[in-house]
Image 1 (cartoon, helix red, strand yellow):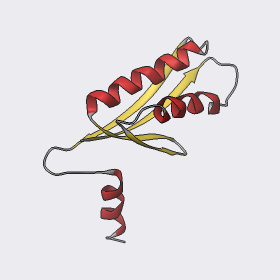
Image 2 (spheres, helix red, strand yellow):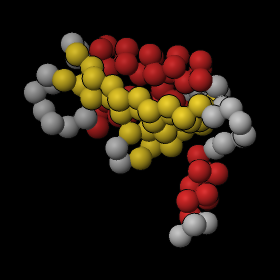
Image 3 (spheres, helix red, strand yellow):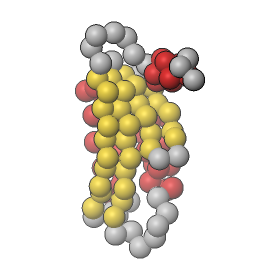
Image 4 (spheres, helix red, strand yellow):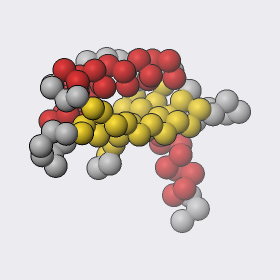
Length: 99
């Protein structure tokens, strides 16, 4: 299972606000059930099958283009662990247990 963080940055929109594009991404994610997701102030974290996550990333990118943006810069961080089961909650618990 993979944990992926996505930040989508639409360029050339004439405004510094990106909330309408973030809302579009959240709508896409809310309409599916295969990938768990969590919005944070700097992006969205997704947990699930990596192929399904990449399919959703492509769909999110296309949604931004469909809103009239000609360039989209995306930052994708992937944690694809194979030695043991991992989750967003488990990663947070691991850090919190050491505080």
